[in-house]
Image (cartoon, rainbow, N blue to C red; front, side, top):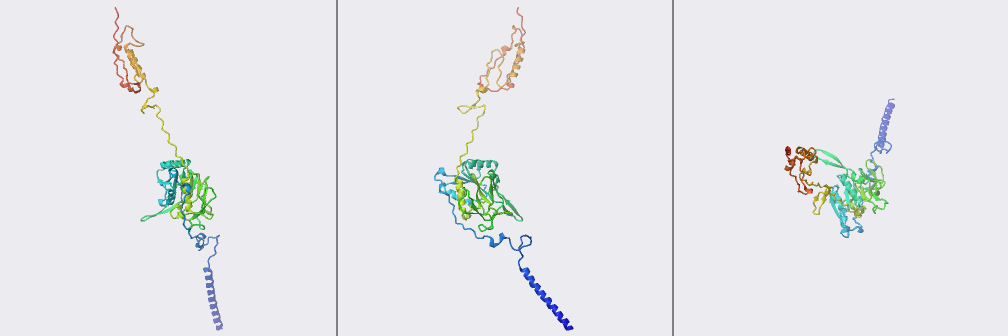
Length: 423
């Protein structure tokens, strides 16, 4: 009996041990296996998203071996063929970054100048370049650029998406968003630059932000295969021709959908590009970037800018005419004539003196001397006539000085002598 109980206890212990081993083996198998990937649930997944999987990301950059050239037909053979390209000094680009564009223009015999006086520069320029500026143009400067393109001048506008800059101090660190100041001028031509960057994890130049673009079928599109853009943004415009588009696998940052985004457009005499890094030294030779730089150079010097109209001369003053010696004189119609005095009569009015006041003074003197409508009998003799000396102004009428009323000589009235009866 005790033997059977002991055998039963051993069997229970062995069974428990086997259960524990089996459970451990099953748990190891379950927990070591990867969790199923279910896109319909929010369950945690240790695997990275598809766009960050090393096997699906292009890591081989495109070789750089190109050289910028300009069509020989656009070379300046003499001084009259030479064109002036003005680069705005407000552009946030280093001189070495545009060296290849400048070098291509100079090799073709044209001039390149950097200026901060836009109004004067556009009077002589044939093309104007503004790359990712940090300062906006004033309303007058925008009008000047618009007038420049209206008379045949060429304009290149280049803008990039917003950049986040990190500034560090002794105890602080700050982030600053750098935005382009191209909005006002671009809006003049109904062009809008995006503020988000483009990326492509399938077709790129070794990095998902180094997107590629191809030319469209437009007649004015550049003749090339593909270009590499390193900080690209989309460019939208009304009634413009799209020159370059990205592949359909290109995305817009911050949850933007995949699409063939336009990155270069042309509207009349204006070309707008959504990336300025393809011109930089070294990157200008990647893919067909050198052909795009040459296309930009040819666009800038193939225009025919007309000189601005001369400013209208100021009209002369209304009441002045020029004499042969160049001095201004008063017209004859405005000259004041000096009346000729009459012997024995009242003094003539002085130019510039109120005639009414003079007439009142004359009537007062006449009344006091018995002359006029209330004069004495004819036998009376006025002593005023004997003391009155007429004033004669010998100065020319055109230069007669103006006398104020207070400057008129005062004549003391003299009482008339009583008349005597003839005997």
